[in-house]
Length: 134
Image (cartoon, rainbow, N blue to C red):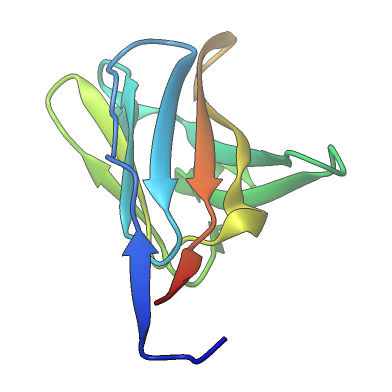
C-alpha cells in the first residue's frame, strides 16, 4: 500500500463549566482552566486552602493556602495556580493542565470555627493525534 499523504488532526473536546458545588469541569491537555467555587467572602477567611485529590492515586496535596497573620499557618503557593476573589465566588486558575491534574479540588474557607467547603472535579482529556492514510 502506497502512502500518499498523512494528515494529523488534533481532537479537542469542548470545555464545559458548571457553577455548582460538586461541579465537573472538562478541559483539554494544555489549556488554562478556571475552577469556580461559589463561596461568599472567601477573601475575608482566617484561612483559605485548596486541596487536590489526584484521580488515580487518591493522594492529597495542598496546592494553595492563604492565612491572616494571627492564624499561624504557612502560605502555600504552587506554580501555575492562582486564586482570584470575586464578589461571591473564588476562582482557582490552573495553567497548562495535563492528565495528572485530573481529580477532585476542595476549597475550604475557615471563619473562626465555621468552615465553608466547596468541591469541584476536573477531568483533563489527553491530546489525541489521529493519522489518516490515503
